[in-house]
Image 1 (cartoon, rainbow over the protein chains, first blue to last red):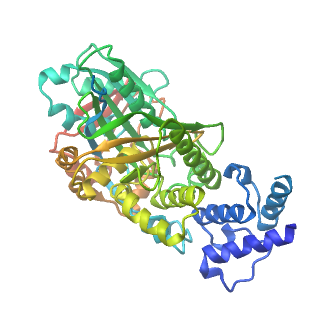
Image 2 (image 1 turned 90 degrees about the vertical axis):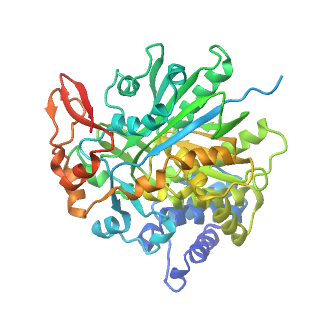
Image 3 (image 1 turned 180 degrees about the vertical axis):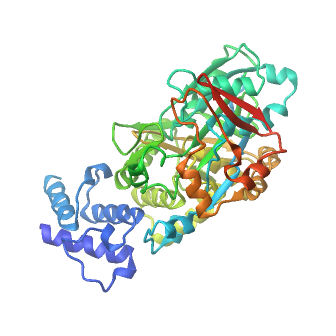
Length: 82
Length: 419
């Protein structure tokens, strides 16, 4: 799966976990916290994205991205390596 | 020969004398939490100037010690204080607690630290002391005591603390550990650990806390999965959904526990959301009974959860409780034990819920006054006398129940009195 497809997948997971964001435009420049996604929801979104990608890694390895684009880059790198 | 028994003979919670409404605090701080209810927070206990980790600990333990006969009390041969709120680098809190409880001199006194994992570390040390059989019939007193007073250092400290101010509470849990475990009979040998070095949350100086909410959450989730997997490596025939009638997890706030439960149910079973929600409400919801009212009590929170579930559910016979403890930095443990109606009766007799109802409800201006801490004895202070009247109504309500209060510091020595 390419990087942009992973970004789309993550954005889909965000809308799934936080239905309030269904109609809001979301891009790779957005950070989940700025969208009003709380820390518990953020971890659920990351877990769901990993599950959808078939990744089984420690969550702490997904810590660090400052926005959704960086998260997609990181997931893409892990996915390619897996 | 019957299997040796060890575990918690008696347990009491002390949830403080003053509390704050957490939603009001969040609004006051301008925190935008559109789905606040999902965080499962209601109130938090706030320590008053004449309270410290020693007063919390003694106020939790004294009813248990007072209920013992002289012969029983003389068998307390170890006092382990589990805390990340120490008041001295050398002298342990146990020395003060031992003195104010009037315990015998033939006793090991020490303090254990590993963030919120400390209580489980202390309990396991005590359980293994009992199981060792080196002093048949001995008892240990394990006390988890923690409070959060993180805005004192300087103006920047309150910013540093912002990520956890709403959830940081105060409280103590005292446990008598022995070979007659009425409240929780440990499943001997049934435990699993996971630990690794991570900089998620720390207390880098007196009265300061720093952390990263996302990293701490991720470390907690990694630990619950891996500690549980270590548990099932040691114990045959375990099914997370079937083997534990109830669960109690370390509770920074209720939403964290809900997230961890969901994580485990997804990882282990790919369970659908409706099943996860129903299972959470049934097996974990009761453990939040007291945690939602006192906030994060750090080392004691997993045992506060145990107390809450024993207060909330109706046991008809013995059943197994799965417990998970996590301490930042980090170390964690999944373990289990058996609870029964007799232990539930003993726990309920402590009147923990009614005591929480009697706390002084702080206004936001009273809370801000306490945060400034003009009457708080800072770490390293040599001499100071506290004016207990800073919040007059709280001091008035505190007296007359035989609780311990911190009076002063004299040549670095903490001076207390029962009021």
